[in-house]
Image 1 (cartoon, rainbow, N blue to C red):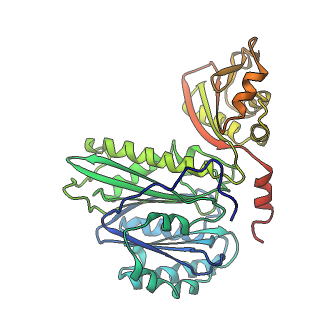
Image 2: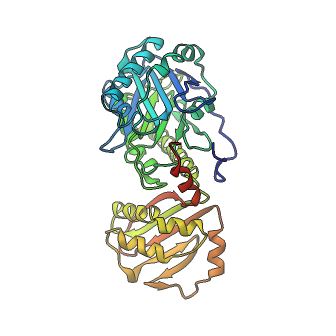
Image 3: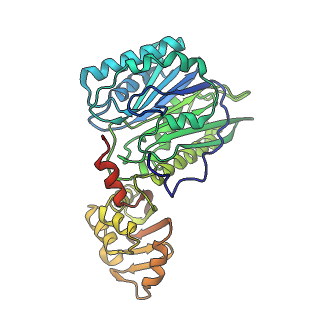
Length: 410
């Protein structure tokens, strides 16, 4: 495993136990040796579920399975593995999902369509479902309310650290908890989801309301990040609600006013996890926030922000700590969105480097170079033609990214 990212949090957060869910991790030897690579979570009866998935036209077999299972809105188990994505594996891949779901259902005591599946790792390699058979029964017996770091570690691939977050919030007169874990470091440009992320709450929320909350929550969190512009075949974000919080009111509609604090807390947790993914971008040394304002619309601002965040020239300049704002101009111009060169302003941190179509008269190379040496950098682009604004997050592009992906399968 690569050295821990210099942008990693100081430590994995302390995630409290959540009523209605137990889990355990195991070593199945799917790809890695002496490393936990299987996660089994068991949910109490009555748990509801929501999910968003990759919009890749080449989705993995587990993504197809989850989309079908999601129709019931009920969940009793989650089976996830790292090391093999079970993507582009044809009929054999589909058979693997059926068999592995059946295995998990047997040890949990539920129906196969109440089991949700997620796989991450190499694309195009068949996943042997029998790898699960030797560990599932024992894993189910060991299932416990924690520690959550074990669950977060079991789903890692090229990640350099496990990712987790927690929030507590009032729902009516009760206190409810939201815990989440995520994995991802490369092939990161989510489209309706993240790489793999599992969020659990003890709030009693109906599946339909939960789905609306999740779909709205990813827009400005996981769907606003990019590491390398590549959307995975396996992106899966699942939100489970066990309903085990004492005295919490049952929520049946997403428009229920009592949900406002919960919605804010959920979105904050999703943003936290999304930022952790970017901070663990393969080879990353810089965390970059791109703010776009003055666009004709939020949608236009998003497209311009992503054009900047995905530009190899921008990202390599940041890696080299070079305040090459000309590459920002290039990215704005190529985005295909309304822009006026002579109204454009660009900032690195709080320092304006370009204004009205040319370099700022007060530009100081020394001052801007100091900003570029920071671990976290904010780039702001003001188009000056409207009120649309948006923010996206990315990282730099280093030689390590090429090294990691040049021998990923070896």
